[in-house]
Image (tube, rainbow, N blue to C red; front, side):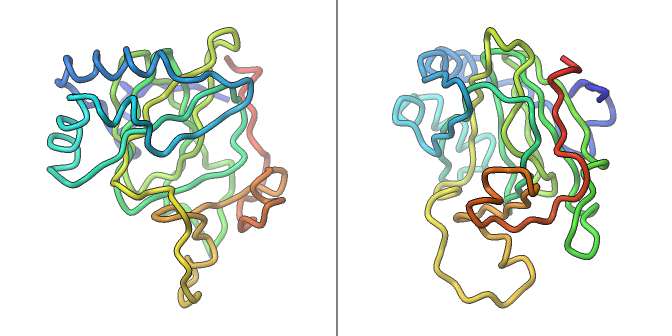
Length: 212
């Protein structure tokens, strides 16, 4: 699979590189380096070690326009797609090491399904802050070096990825709701599918292990 750069013009359809906030980024990266690095992949929606940083206020002010936000992480080792998710808001990512995002666009969903052949891979250099638009389907990062894995900041509006609200299904998207402000599209080969996530990804469960 071709691995592009977030600095390539093609990434503009999925997100953009955020400039500035250098002091805040440095503070976050230092704290992020102390978070766990599992052999597989783990996610923490809100980590006090990040949330209590002075930089957290800057993130809420400058990236979310003053809206309450949460700073967590997704860390570990991964090379597979497995699922795609989206939120009603942008997500911001920042890694201590280079990492790769596998992404597609919500407008590529057809008749409630998505062909994984539409997924693209973008490399994010270490220390680069990127916004992933609300219209972008994404999921766990992939590592570029199995010896280093990845530690990636996940900044989202407060409450995102917490407990799924107990609602009656009234729209087609309701079947995809997996957590608060998290709609999940699973590949049949994924663990999430076995746990009951909606299986709506068709095609190969992309694995970039041979491309890095």
